[in-house]
Length: 117
Image (cartoon, rainbow, N blue to C red):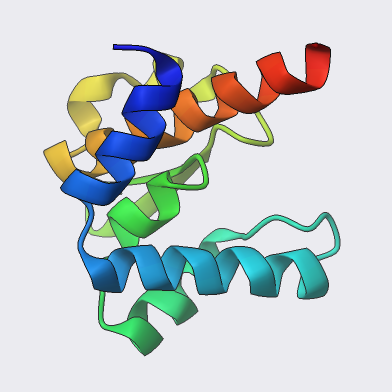
């Protein structure tokens, strides 16, 4: 499969309509309201609660990966700090997080190619 097929097909088939709606709403909100135009873990938590979706897969659609570290939730920002998620290790993240993160990485690869060409 190509990155484009993973990004579009995975998005449509692996994510619930509610998660897709929360993703689109958060993306549009962050473009206007976040200083760098990209969501933060705090905004992911707010939108997840508002739309009734789990925060972990929603965040992963933006490269924001969360996992349990003791009693706390830790966030890895692979958008702003690329490669940091590899240092933490894939085994820390759940299946739904990795599916959403895969869609994020595939979409990012497609966008980078389009910008370069």
